[in-house]
Length: 456
Image (tube, rainbow, N blue to C red; front, side):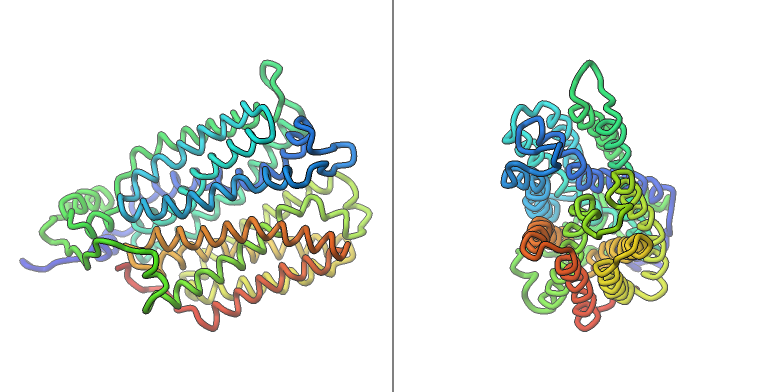
């Protein structure tokens, strides 16, 4: 009927899930493996790098210069923190696509450049620069993916994005085993240098694949470019979309970050911050220390190096069913209920893991911590994307990722300080569990449910 107008959300809902959506889920997911890969690989490779540059003793497996060693371990997270804040703002102001294209290309270049490192300062610099691109991927990938997906499919496919995280975890273990444990090299180069060059190549291929992805139709419509929005929607849905039939929506020329802490957005920002603190503190505080603390449980089997690899693989494999359960429940129960429940049960599992004294209980406790913690990570992305309107979405993600990365940096430091202070595992592991459960309790009490709400 003449004169009837539709929002971008309406068109996406009517168009359903298409071949284009399968492609963008695959492209963003493929890149997402490198986010997990980057986070895990440095903790596995750094002892060898540190030994070459005189800050780590492989014989005793201890850092001889803990300050430099810790700084390099945190370099990528520091770069990611800055990149997520800056690039999230740029994506809201200038469009998603440019940051979407350049962030992974930037990451791949400086990942390869790490192989050229000549001292500890250069390793820190290259890891920091690679982290800037990683920060862009962390905020823009989920933002742009959420704005392409039809609302009835958005929740489960946003969770599917995080399903690629354990693939990156396993990929990091595979690279570590191939290049560090087995010592595979090329042209006589140090195996760790070959590792970073090899890791950059598939990321570069992913950067090329991103060229086929257009700008977000929400961004175009928000800025009055209805013809461009209609063109993208035609491509997405496979149906002709007339620009004259689209509504522009509320025009907001500027989206200052301060607005996130005013009015209706203040409570949503507070819930977002507390949830991301709980997730980042628990994940990075535990998993970056995991290879080191396992012998501290006093279980004979865990004193053997082979069991460290077994536990890492087990924790990665447990993440897959966690994501699958989260993918189902975010649509069945809702985003808030799923995320809060997984955080609370992750805290309970963490307490079991902290007090374990036998091989079976340590393994089962770790498996359940991985299941619930990573399942919560799967739910937090669709939830965060739906908490904020379009003009604040990437900024909101940037805020969440920024706060999260500060916590990710502090989490392992606090864990290590407690470990040194009490000379035991129960207190630092119990703190991880309590923070996780507290995040779930705050979310359950204060967070709104976003399932079924239209993007604005």
